[in-house]
Length: 124
Image 1 (tube, one colour):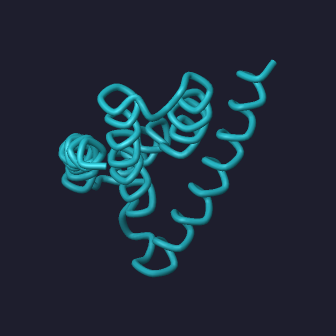
Image 2: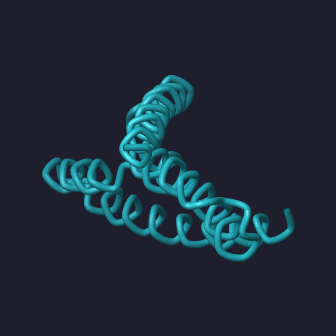
């Protein structure tokens, strides 16, 4: 029962954080490119990198906190399926370069920030 509660709490918090942050990014930068989803995906990778280091190298997260933060929060916060949908929409509207940039930037920046988060987590 506690696992389910942790998923609900983490997932709710991740969903709200995603909605607020993506909306702020779109208001700040505009909607000509899926910047909000890009920011969510790469920052989610960074956060997950920190959490993995804290859990696996520092042993600072017990199994309940892993479920709440890593599965619940990060699972709801990141928006990979939205990345794919927005990329498909870019392709359908003839924006092949933007579609490629969206995929490439999300994956490469996501991986780089995951590693940066992991290194930061090791320093904590």
